[in-house]
Length: 513
Image (cartoon, rainbow, N blue to C red; front, side, top):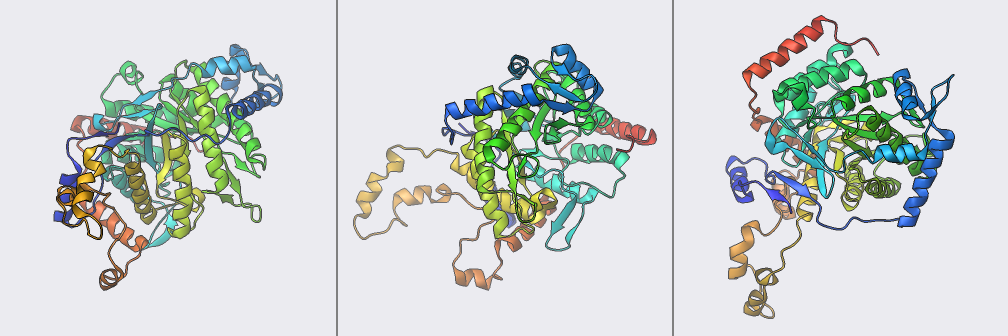
């Protein structure tokens, strides 16, 4: 059942009307009450599993970090003496993966924003990682720290966004050696939701771990008991983990923070052109990463990341929100259930603008995520251009779609009142239900109240400026930023964070990549 906060929808809507601002659903933890959609049989899942095991046993994977290879060697994997190739006995993989928890509970700075990954929980996060930013007012441009800060403010303000991706857009106006420090500082100050921690190299990971611990006010022992950061570990597909990712994985695993281990398998480019073949490769890469994390620290919380899509075979450009992406997402979710670990997918599209294409491709992605029982929907709000741009308007378009999905996840109540036999009897043939007691008792909360959609007739809409959804989204994000309230942060913690950032900046931050 979805858990609602005491503040009900009515008070939220009344406040929204009174302030002439946006209307949003109240904060609640989302669960999926429906059976997961499974598009391949259990026997076919087993075929994919066995093929993945063959890849790991016979072909193997490159682990470019010597420390990682030594960990694998000591665990019993076959490591080549003169190169980075590692081959895995399937029993080793299966025993290691079995140590990963099936249910992960995370700790946010505000306990009301604690999240659970696994079972039937579903969590939506903001876009992460694009180097560019766009809005209708200033167009497309390189991301800045202020753009990132505003994305974090939106993530904090919208209840449907459960995680504040502190890498929502890359702040290219901050030097790379200290960028992660500035990002971590503004993310902690501007949001009290579960935060992303950088794992691109050991030094960045250690810095974000320390900042996360400081923000929590806990000792290292206490902080390591429950993850307060999540990070993404990408395989360098095909069949390789690079040095920075492995360093970051080791540091995060030793502190038992949440690792979202995600191959980047684009069929026809970095993976076979057939979707079953691409999923076999995804599965092999994901299992190798999950197993490695458990060999570093048994019980490390992980999420199996699915990111398999296809490329445009005419141009070679990535395509997202495609039928193939939806199928790969659903199969990936089935595989994650087989291994009893949480699953991650994404709300993605390949459109270059917050337009109709961006919406219908996102709709394909979102439905696949929900029908497949995805536990973590990354890039849930604001993704454009196949991940190269973050958009304010798309953020609001996505928020509307995700709110609608949240309402869909509330099963209808079937009882005497909802069956409405008395109302049907009262109205009879040829009447209407507008003024019946049954309607008057329920009309205010009978249906979903949109954040963005305009349901007025054409004449009223025209008289009010004929604004389309993207133009209305432009108004809404501005209103949200104008109404933003910074969450409280203990002044002593804030001072300690600033001192840490100042010290690490004076030390030069991290070395150039």
